[in-house]
Image (cartoon, rainbow, N blue to C red; front, side, top):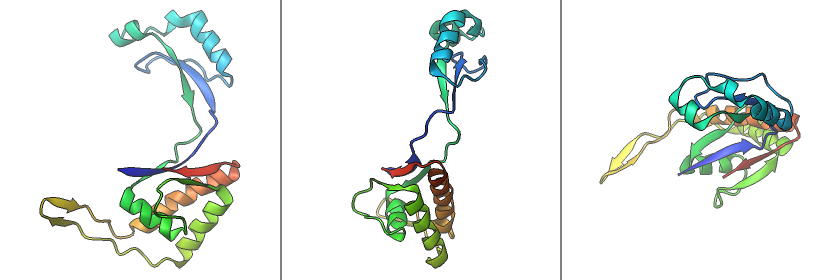
Length: 158
């Protein structure tokens, strides 16, 4: 099981593409224009790949950036606790400014993560955590938080 920290993004554009991705249109800012291109020129997006001949083209939604941070449940609890969030429910949300403030505070105050060794007992393996893991993930969360703050978005996790 895992938890992903993410922001809901508005699409940055739309592109008509064949199933395998070899043939692509120019980028459209408007989804209606992309569907118009698809409907008017569907057969221009047949690249010869068998799957493309069967499934045809489609409108592919493009995003500015994929800044998602995915961690295991146990590491999510550690991160959420470090950030001062509830660790029982592994889902929630925060405004970008609050989130990035918590991350910066954690980076300033949290001692360097010593890591956790791999442990194997009775067929169960705890994969541990490498040295510096917490700071590395906090750095990724800082990038996510700054993006959310700069774009007036909320950060969600679950």
